[in-house]
Image (cartoon, rainbow, N blue to C red; front, side):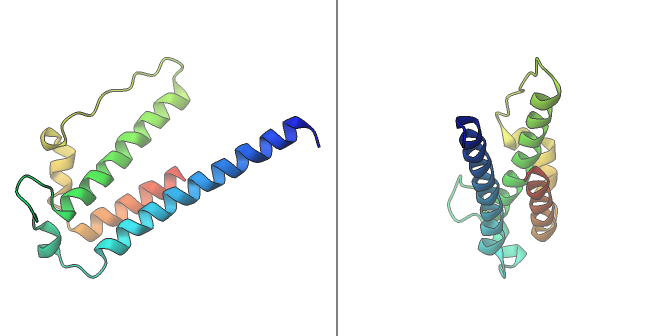
Length: 116
């Protein structure tokens, strides 16, 4: 077995492990909010801290942001990565917070799976 074969297998194993981890993380988000009603998910547990629903909406939004960045890097040799600085001023994030949590979760899981 040549060094190239070994490197290729290591790279493949690393890729598979990364994909599995991404899937587990998404599944964990679903497990954490399973059975929790919309009112409880929307409640902030501490002043100045996001509610579980806002966190879910942030995960969903960031999945889109990272997907767009990845697409740019794969399709543009001179890709410019636009900073994402303030979700509280992001109209898309704010719109997500108005949707039912289960809808946001479904979209997040679909986006994550598409990335995998």
